[in-house]
Length: 235
Image (cartoon, rainbow, N blue to C red; front, top):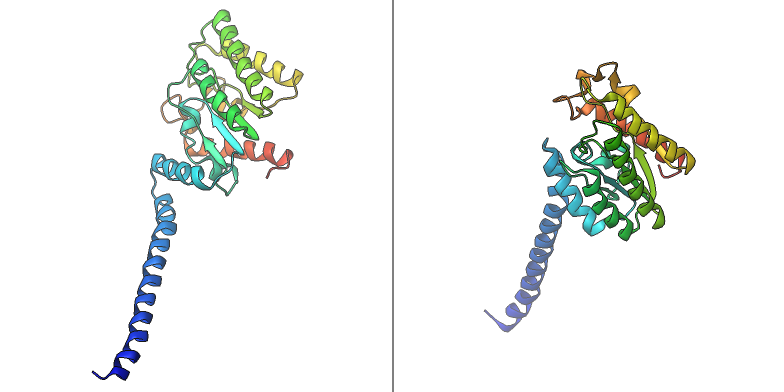
């Protein structure tokens, strides 16, 4: 190979190496961008939530938080349910959590200074009489005060009935106390029981097991949340 041929080959080799590098970078970006989208097609809500929360931790803003027990947790990717198509909606719901345990996540939400925090408490507190309803109410108020003191706007979802609710009178007592507090302190609240329940408690068409909700119930809940956020000019 002559010297002139080598000189001609070098630019070609450099160009090929450059093209190969561009292709590798393009492939890497393609995988990074499409993998989450493919994952969202998986029906497993837990996986969807894990992917969403991972992306939110890198690219999202602290706008909306959800705290509560398994009923909140199983909303999974709340952003899609409330019509907020961004990475700014965080689900901190935990299965089995009592109001006292939910308070730890209220502290986290307060520290991160979210704009809004959707809260539902009481379902795992064992409310069976006046004293237990009053105790749970006071714990809920402590959470609301924690959020308000950090300029996080709380939005309460009142406690849901179970199917064939045995303690509906005390659930009503708890909800009435929370409702009155919200009205006196200008806190927005959502009552899903008129939509999801009848005289026997949570209706079977909205319940998977007597306590937890089906997708059709989450659609109603998401609609009510969207309405509240629209009134607050967020959506």
